[in-house]
Image 1 (cartoon, rainbow, N blue to C red):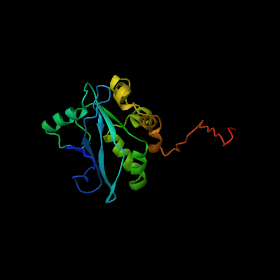
Image 2 (image 1 turned 135 degrees about the horizontal axis):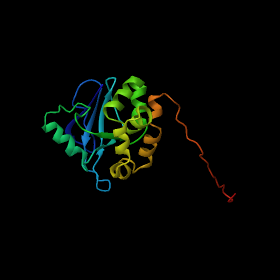
Image 3 (image 1 turned 180 degrees about the horizontal axis):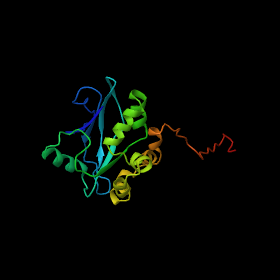
Image 4 (image 1 turned 30 degrees about the vertical axis):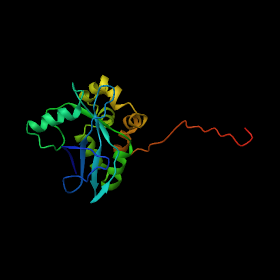
Length: 183
């Protein structure tokens, strides 16, 4: 499975991936998260089927606009196939289902390969114990952009469990109901 960045812009309805086969293509987007532009909608094909995956956020070290860093890498000769050479970066999917869907369609090994080339923060911090990833996780951009939504926080906290094939559970969830008479 390939993960690519080809500098194509996202649209209201995203086009299918430009490359044949099983592929995830990151599309550019100018969404600003407190001064950081790290959001990448994706277009995806798994097992020959177009699959809607949640987008992801990718933070490049010492950059505020990740797509600009990827564009410069392409201008310098990078073919757009991840991993990005000579670049320190981490990513977090918009939802934990990003890797669950890949694992369900193509297996956990393929999902782990995708997490490795995208430098998934949850996987690198909790499974690999990667020092460079830990440094980026402690950065301003990670906290204000990659962790700005609850679903991204959940993907970072529990995403590694997908690769370890551990169950993901919701705990301490309570409900309060009120009937028609106020009880």
